Length: 101
Image (cartoon, rainbow, N blue to C red; front, top):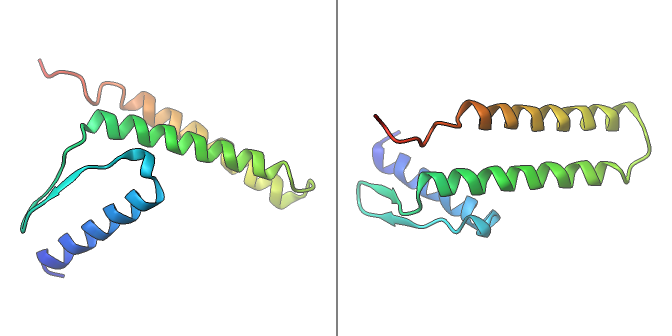
């Protein structure tokens, strides 16, 4: 796969994310060889975390509409595991955007 194809694939992914999550308000500058995000990394990180937490809450709420079954229980357990993994990601990256010394 050449660089132009990789760039086009990346642009397509960014546009798909923009369409699925307009609340991210992704701003990019696209030139022939370079794609630049105009949003700050911190802003995108925090907005993305918020979106993921919201989606996990929606999944949890949706599972309440189904009768108890092993499958629903497994989905609920996996949802909880995803939340915990996300929390660990947040905690492990807390200094991700700290100023360099």
